Image (cartoon, rainbow, N blue to C red; front, top):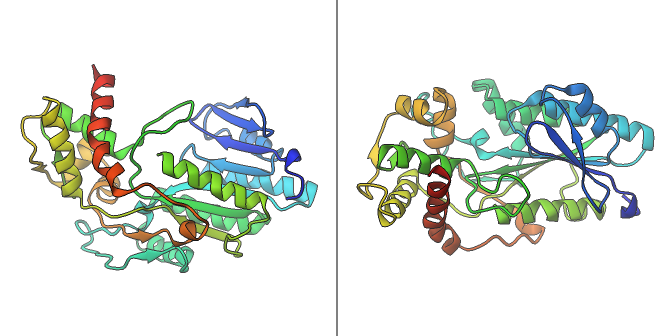
Length: 310
């Protein structure tokens, strides 16, 4: 992009704020909510790069940001970039409701975009729908799009706002409430965002040349039952749970307890198979932490969730 001293980067966070980074300092831009398309589009039109972390399920805000970036491209003639946060539930199977099992381990060096299109035709899913809107809108207005598609995120972030992920703390809170773990089925990731941004600033060095790029961020695999057992052991060690053994519950119970009643979200988020290889990230030089960090995370995360619930 030339001289990075002129870089204007926009980072979207929780509903209600965006942060503009002219490299040094933070200049917040307030907006009503993710449906405030006019403000969002205008803010994006004044920046060269947008990193969207507010929601992977809100197509309107993603489209508004990319349309704004499209205006920026037309006015400056420069390459403009959009980095989007998503999740691998987009490629997860549906073994319970549709008896569809995905046996493959998906690589981000293959045509994941076409795969997402095929899955969306079978069953629309808000997060996957948003990813397709990202790609299609980016191609329409000439904005290069990068989608970081993450599996279960664990550990603690170092940012100014939320420092925990979603799935594991949610399962821990549910375990505390019910006195046992149940099962149907963040630092590392920040480094990858920074790495992708750095490569963009270097003229997309090392990134695939196609207009849309899906980047998987997985570091390993686990079974839902094993995760529930680790939560159970941590809870017993802290004197909170009655037994380390997970209790089996059905999809309807899971939906009611963890997914606001949505069977689709419960299955894709807590009872599916989704195995991916982060080949592009590894080629970029990303070096995630080891399995030991995963193992020790549960006691640490349980402790934090417990403290917050008191």
